[in-house]
Length: 205
Ligand code: SF4
Ligand code: SF4
Image 1 (cartoon, rainbow, N blue to C red):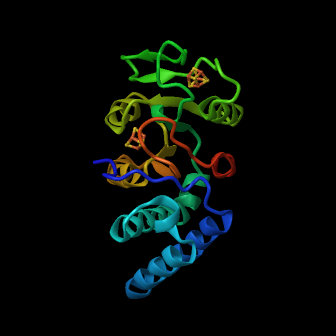
Image 2: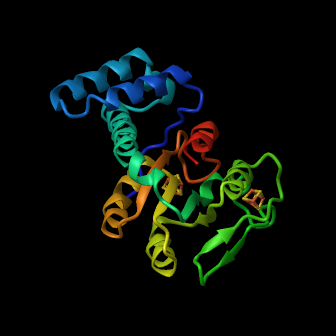
């Protein structure tokens, strides 16, 4: 289930994400983690910045922290992988309308292939970065497409960009298929014109 709330962290200072990374290392101490999540929420005024209520803000921060912790745990295994794919969400395209976005959907894959129509589209940018690193790139209409893609190829490493809760739900599937992964959670959701951190993606690739 996608988040039931809309958020936008794209204007929150970079220091916030550094703090999220720091807190993720303390994940083993659960009571302390909750206190720290609340402290990050307060320090960066996430509720004021996003309009989320208290429980929504905490749910979002906890997912960001969990994914940082998973990335740290998976990093070594991911670093040894030889055949990798990048999964991008279709909601991050510059245009959702097929009149403007020239991506072609292939139902056999099943995924869109970006046709690079817009220089300033972050999907275009991400595709170019990934292609230079030898990744196969899939622009997905949803997480349900992933099992078919993984079964058709022998990827041992995946980088996934999507809402934090969506990526967390896919973790057990990737683990069961022995696929190491790294997560890049969206910093703005809403199912269109969504945003991810392109610098974080570049570093991860
Ligand atoms: S660059 Fe790719 S994803 Fe972006 S609008 Fe064009 S075809 Fe669609
Ligand atoms: S914002 Fe994108 S990744 Fe998140 S649920 Fe909507 S379509 Fe999926």
